[in-house]
Image (cartoon, rainbow, N blue to C red; front, top):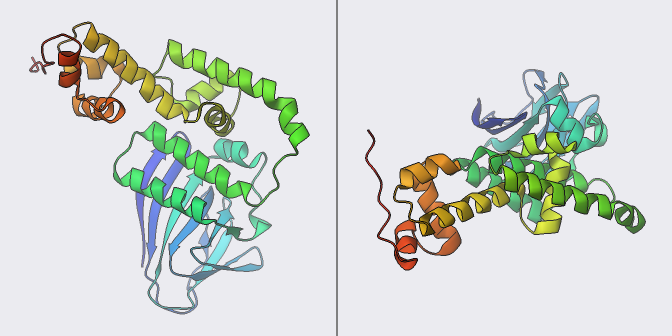
Length: 278
């Protein structure tokens, strides 16, 4: 009756597509929560009993859960339900919540914009998007969801930290320029901050995420080498950290409007070729 399909497990973050086909009625078992996380309802409705509280959950809401929390799910209607479950390690959860998550806060309201972000994350998982990008999208979604349940800091507090945030972005840009292969968790650790904070501040100052910036840097490096006469897409993809030459071609075409072969011709060289494997 309950099927969970793993979509991502990376750097303390897991995503699962969970389908429940329980008939209408009371749940038959108490289910311990496996970890810190956020659960988004995509379809259907159910009643959750946990820590003495009862919550009615539908696609306008999400809820927080914590490890070992005893919970029971009742189903007021038939037809089942579908959920997206984000699970976080204790370390990642602490960076998102600022402290140990409080699952007793009740359902979290989900705006239409946050719901779109949630469904976009699922779509990117199905497209087998780069894990670094999925990781960042997951942190952004969790941050946007949690932001709806607590007030924003006052303007004075934001101003007091603006210089530090600009410096953090500068440090991140420098580190990525030196080694574009740095993933967000590694970069955050080296800069002494949390991945969620770095992702949020970086996006606010640059207009795009860390994963996108890494991809842009690698694409620019590919363009430079194509302009210099590089004749092997396979070697380019390997050297610059793309999954394969198809990934390289798709990325460059999406960013420039041209394939690598078209770019090489445009820049005055013969078409790029793929060398056969030895």
